[in-house]
Amino acid sequence: MRKLPFASSTECPPDACMTRRQILGALAGLTAAACSSTTVAHVESDGGGSASDAGAEEGGTACAVTPAGTNEGTVASYPLGTWKKKNSYIIAQDAMGFFAFSAICTHSGCLVNAPIADGSTFCACHGSKFDGNGAVLQGPAQTPLPHYAVTVCGGAVYVDENTGVSATARTPAG
Image 1 (tube, rainbow, N blue to C red):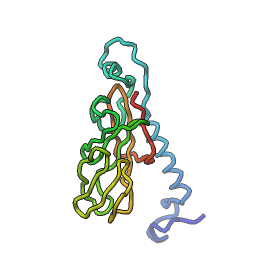
Image 2: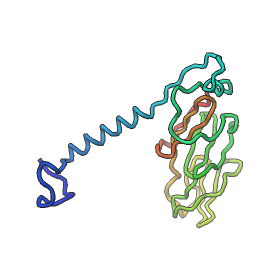
Image 3: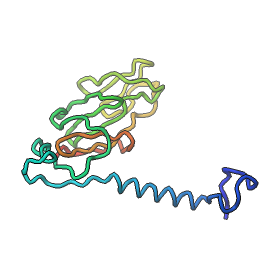
Image 4: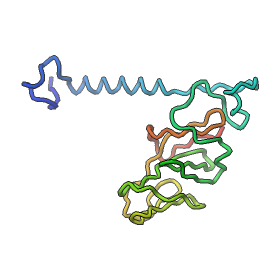
């Protein structure tokens, strides 16, 4: 069995080194644990008026567990066809649902300007332009802006910068 070259055999006793298979197994276990600990269970509102049901009246389901990420306001705060820059990301809603992508230019890490009406944005540092989905329209940036997981729960929009998703991922409003 081949040991990974993190340390020479004189620095690492045989029973203290991990094989590639052991490392991958450990990573798989951690990934499964992380995924199961951030799973959001949705329950339908019964109209009982509890605090967790309040957002469901705005269009959404009540949350049994608070979603991962930052609460960025209500669904009503993001009308269809709008883009808003919040913190270090941009949140938008199109016909398919909510999405969020980084507001940090992939060229040299500058914060991009707030999006204009069509969602496109501009990096004042070196002139990169991005469309309303974070794709590069003009360099020097060559990499699109990464997308983040969005959850709508209890009528609130949550953005999780720690979870990357496909640029085509959308979360329905309700």
